[in-house]
Amino acid sequence: MTAALVPDGFRKLDVTDDFVHLIGPLWFKVEADRVRVGLPLEPRHGNPMGWAHGGLLVTVADMVMGVGAGHETGIRWPHPTISLSSEFVRGAKLGQWLEGSARIARRTANFCFCSCDLVCGGDVVLVASGVFKVPAVDKIPEAERARVVGKWGDA
Image 1 (cartoon, helix red, strand yellow):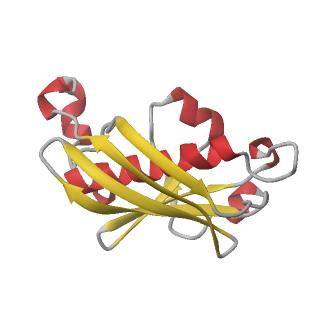
Image 2: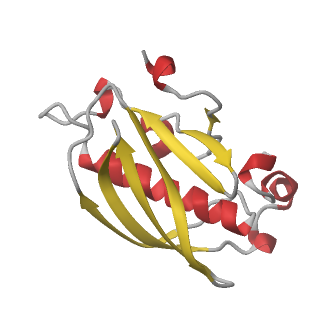
């Protein structure tokens, strides 16, 4: 069932975050200058009421904006979350595709200010905004730099 929910053209998002591996894999697709990130909602993602758990939705929004910040900066390396705000709009039904893409409001040398809407079944289920730290390229392990510098579509 899970593979059938992943839309055409999406690829597995390669992240080293063990926590994200617990909920994922996440999937991504680059379109123009944005990255769409999604997740097929499985029974393991549910709360006792049969909807996607709120903590899962916030985690996905955090990843959507972090990946979007990385695409904006051209550094596919963790952009630590400085702040994150979210509002639940409606429930996300299990068995459906959950997706979002980041909107970058402003980028400075040190920060990306982002927002996103998570959509499930054609409906907005969560709105979020956050501030993400731009990593210093010279602090990325030298062996990793060539692999992580560039847009997500270059990966």
